[in-house]
Length: 249
Image (cartoon, rainbow, N blue to C red; front, side, top):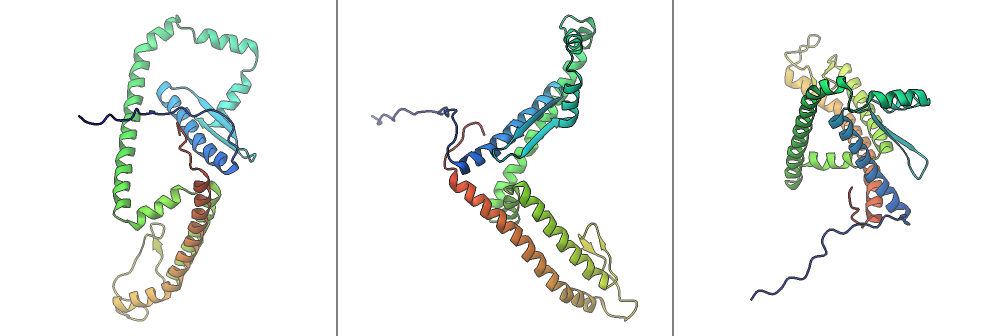
């Protein structure tokens, strides 16, 4: 006879109470804020409403999200503050309005289309997550780099973008020294044939360019890695303080 398995406690409900640890409180706020904004977005897409969420962090920073925008939703709310306008709006939203009844089939169709689009987007997101997880398991450096970028806070992303822009400017300047402008935002160089001025062969020209580019590429790695290291340190500190699996985030 197989031994009896101990009864499972199941999924436990987290007690809603103030979090004493400052670091844990910051981590919880960051996660739940994203969850709140996702719910507002889903509500706007699925129900065709205008919605906004405004949140102040424990440190006094303000975060907002709205559809079509937080400003437009707040302006609409402020402009309809009089009781007469609110009464008219309530009458317009009446369920027995003949115009609403006539529009019901069209609204149902649009609602179905929006649900289908949302389902397709979620499916694409799951596929991307699976591919990303596979690349991470295979030790992909690109996956590790993207993991770090996804974990950056807003301040770190701003610094990271500035470092990349500065590095790109150095690369572009080096390319211009050879009279070879960068195309596609720095994705490739136009290198072909021979040099019109010196008659240099293509391989010699490429070698000279790569030699001149080497210090720039080292600068790229230094600045990008510095921004990435700062973000990693901030993330590690927050993760170490949050050992609790917060429910619903």
